[in-house]
Length: 103
Image (cartoon, rainbow, N blue to C red; front, top):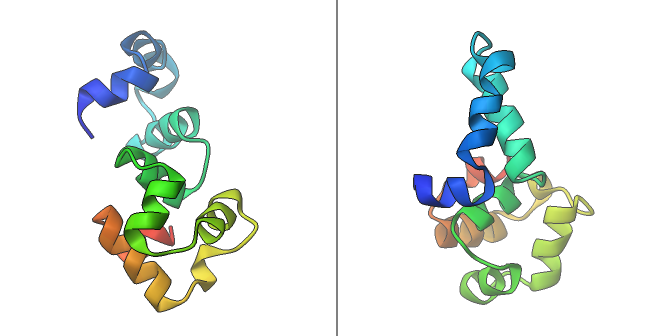
């Protein structure tokens, strides 16, 4: 993701303020905190937003029903139980792997 896009939702001042609690922590801890701040939703939502798609745009391009995408993002449905075809269509549209979507 380009820094310009990151700084739109996560300003440099906030990154600097996180230095003290996280400078000696594992990278994964800082990344987890940043993700929770920037995208409190699940992985599908995180990837979708990083690609600048709305839910309806993703639905139209991928061919996956809008209600299905909304259900996965809200947690009403478990994306790990999605059909292979649904995962394939979403992953292809979002330029990621099917495994990425199930994290």
